[in-house]
Image (cartoon, rainbow over all chains, first blue to last red):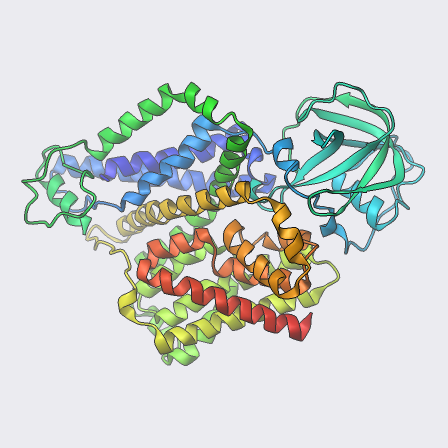
Length: 235
Length: 348
C-alpha cells in the first residue's frame, strides 16, 4: 500500500471516530466516558494522516523518496470498521439480543447497601438494575410504599412482554440485558423495541429467566407510556 | 520483503505497480511486473463503490442478526482503537526518543532477574492489552530481553491500577478476588518469561522491520505510529470480527449445564475469555455477572482474558510473527489456567 493510500485510511479511521463522537452515535457502541478516549485518539490519527500526506507530497516534489514502504496488506482490513462506522452505522443492541441473553442481575448479589428512596419524589425514577437488585436481594424492603418509574424497551419472552435494558460494562460487545416482568393489565399494543416509561409499585412476584435461570422481578403496573428512544440506550 | 517493491516503484516515478501480487516479488525483476491498480486508485474505487452501494449495504445489514453482529464489531473496534493508539504512540516514543542503551542500564542484566522486574513494572502502564502488545514489540526492538518484554506484555494489562480498581468494584466486599487475580496473573506472567528464557528461540520471532530515518527523531516517531497502527490495527480488525461472530452465534444456553461441574466450569470460562476478547479493564464486571459459575472459574476468566484471546492472538501474530503466536498462545492459556486454579484453591 502506498503512503498516500495509508494516509487516506488513517484519515478515514480517525475521521470516523471523530464523527461518532460529534454525532453522539458513539453511545450505541461504548460507554459515555469513552468520549474522552475516542476524541484524542481520532485526532491523533487524523494528525498522522496529515503528516503522512504532507511528507508524501514533499517527497514527490523533491523526487527523492526514500521510504515508500509497502505496508502489510492487513491494513486494508481497517476499511471494514470504517464501513461499519460511516456507512452501516448499526443501531444499539435491542430486543433481538436481549431475548437471547440471560438477565444480568446476579452481578448485584454482593451489593452491601440499599439506600432509602426519597419520600418527596413521586414516582421515584430508578434504573432497571437498581430496581431488580433491590427487589431480589433486599426483598423489596426499600421499595415498599413508593411509586416507581422505570424506563426501558419491550421484549417478548415467549408471549409475555417484559421490560428490559442493556447493561454495558465496556463496550456493546459485552452488553447483557436486565429484565423485569409486568404484573397487572397491559396495553395490547406493546411492540418489541418500543421504549416505554412504566410507573408502578413493587410486587413480590418473581419469575425465572429461561436462558440462565436467574430471578426476574416483577412490577405491579399502574401505567405504561410510550417514550422516544433515549440518547444513551445502555446502562 | 514487500518494502523493496514499493521503494523501487516510487523511485521510478512511474505509476507504481503497488499491491497486485500476493507474494513479495524479488527486487531484481520489478520491470517485468504487470501494471495494475495502484493502491490509491483501488482505494478510491472502493470508496466510490461503498458510497453508491450504501442503500444496498443498509438493506443487507437490516436483518436483526446482522445488525447485532455489526454493532458488536464496531463496538470492539471503537473501544479498542484508542488504546491501540495509546500503545503505538508509546511504542513509537520508545523507538524514536529512548536512547538505545537506556534499557540495558535500567533492566537487570540477568534475564532470570529481569523477568520479575518487568512483571512488576507492568503495573505502571494503565492501559489494556491492545496497548501492551505494540509496547512489548518496541521493547524487544530496543534490545530488552524478549523474556522480560513478554512478561511485561502479559502482566501489564492484568495488574495495572485501573484493572485492580475495576476488579475491586465488580466484586464488592470480596478483596480476596482482587488479591487472587493480581497474584495469579503476576505468577503466570513471570513463569512464562522464565519459560521463554529457558526454551524460547529467537528465530520464532519475526518483528516487522522499521526503516531508518535520517530526517530526525520526529519523522521516525510519526512514521512508527503510522506503521504500527496500520499493522496492528489490521490484525485487531480480524480479532474483532471473530469476537463479534462468536458473541452473536454461540447461544448462552450452552453455558448453563457446564456451570454446575467445577472442572468444566473453569475450562468453559477460560475458553469463553479467549473467545469474547473483552478489555481487561472491564472483564471483571462481565465475570461478576456470570453468577452460575464458581469463584475459581470467574478468576480463570479474568486471568486468561488479558493473557490471550482471539483479538490478542491476531495482534501478537502481527507484531511478533505467526510462528511465535502459534507457540505462545497455547502456553499462555495453560499457564493462566494453572495459575488461576492454584490461586483459586489457595484463596477462594
